[in-house]
Length: 129
View (cartoon, rainbow, N blue to C red):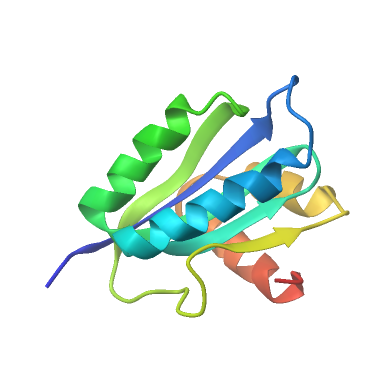
């Protein structure tokens, strides 16, 4: 059985990137995630990204390396990383929620570790995914 792993991180859209680049990111990521057994949720408020993703540990860590090298976002900060007993996201390879209230992400971004994860999980039911 493959060990499941999850990561929750925040970053900001790079200054030279238009907001519509998010659609391109999601379209490519969905296809790759499906092949690699990765599922998750990307939240975007027009300026900041917050993403939680999960899957086989090796694939999750490879994805993290790609994300860290991606020039479309900056100031990346992982706030939670750990093992996972069962998937949180069964319905989609990469869900996208665009929020207009940037305060939601700002509040979660203030925390690290299990507290950040708990606050993000509490935010999910309010998102239009």
